[in-house]
Amino acid sequence: MEKAIASSTSLEDLVNSGFNDSERRLLYSWLAQMNNCDVNAEEPDPEKTPLFLAAHRYVGTLSAGDLMFIPFGWRHFVLKSLDDVDSHD
Image: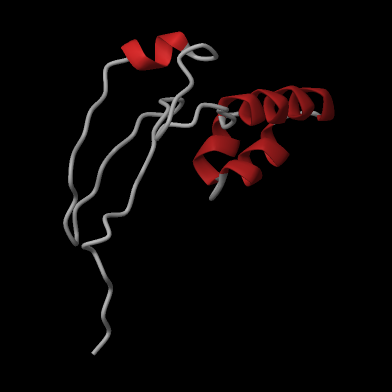
């Protein structure tokens, strides 16, 4: 397994080289659940997702060249500002 992690260049390579078919199915199923969120972050439904409104939020603005690290599994919502217009003159 350590060889698979050290030599893999992508998650797909890691999964395909380090796990058997049964393990792959479980992992892909788990990843699909982790990456699926049915909350509308801009207009959350308090009846459907009451805890979402109480969740602690971090708000920030990134500039060109900035990087934001979001830990694996953390839910996030990204919105591009209308003021940010790319121009390639």
